[in-house]
Image 1 (cartoon, rainbow, N blue to C red):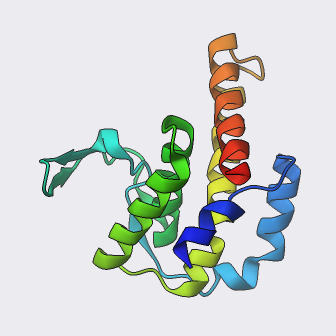
Image 2 (cartoon, rainbow, N blue to C red):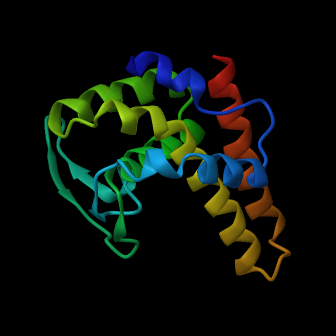
Image 3 (spheres, helix red, strand yellow):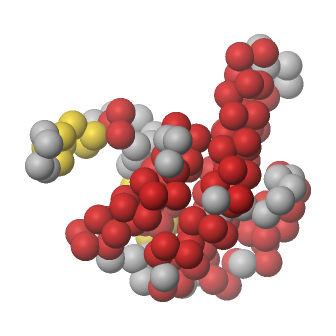
Length: 155
């Protein structure tokens, strides 16, 4: 179940309008997800840990009321574009997360779309931060994210 998820992360062409359409089409599915206050930027740089356990989660400046599965999607997206073996890392993260705070099947099914939604948000934020003309290094970061998502799908 979880191992197959990483193969469904992204379709071949990434298109923000397509992601918006998928989200609109999935409104009934999203209405069934558990919600609450989430971290909003849940990834390794914001987790203080020893070799054996998580000690603390820091940097709550992006906290918001959203789907709990969105925090998982944010972490997975970060893994996808920062790790050479993204599929393996994503599977390990999901298995560990499921042991602590199990996501229901409907949330797991929506993780790929949540990841695409997060990537779309990053793209739009980057463009807006620079009046529609982001500097080259930010464009490269967005391209790296999209390339990594495509590579994950191919693996």
